[in-house]
Image 1 (cartoon, rainbow, N blue to C red):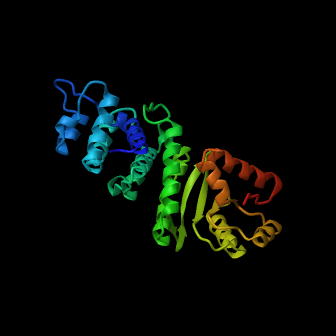
Image 2: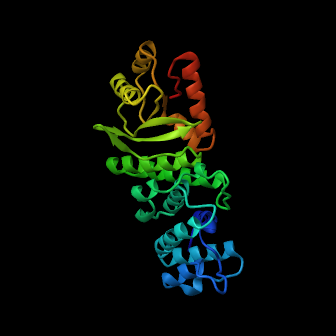
Length: 297
């Protein structure tokens, strides 16, 4: 029997997938429908028809109970990209990240929808300002963010947790429409990712380590940021503490080109106590006005 949490997550997933395919086809049409997806995975009777959202939720519940949810999601994702490309609301990177977060909340990993090469070729939601989505609301997305964060924390494998943390951050930044990009290499340097805040590009350094962040770590990141351009900015996020001496020395030295975020501050945003984008803006303004790296740890 499904738990209440599983039922809620399936409901959220149904809302997210609602615009991906039509519920029924025109008598002379050739569009792939949710009914076709159900038939493709061997469950034609699971699509009951009628009102689209209840029918979609029923389909997902049946697929989940029969361990076919991964198959149905892949079918919808594959055909939904083609279907939505023909309209005014093509699948975006944020849609893919959102879908990944919701499936992970159900304990389901679907590599096909997390392929970096595929996601990189999808448009960002911001490039289509006239698009209208009937998908999930921000509170639902943030619920998936919380679920994803709990999964990262509970992973006992340090290396795997690091990769999960990177994926979680993609979900978090996408939840606030910050157009995240995953890790990449530039002239021998590893960059953990980037994002856009108020039309400005920020480079990201993200660490899940118990070892305190020292001055040398901050200096190296400062060099990464400033070596790209005169207008580059950065965010250094650490799940471990920052050495107080390191912060004091950085504040006394050359003006940093980045802000820092502590575990305590991240967890406040994950729990919905503060908006992620608001926190970042406050830190950027504090640095610009007062010239210091303020952090609550």
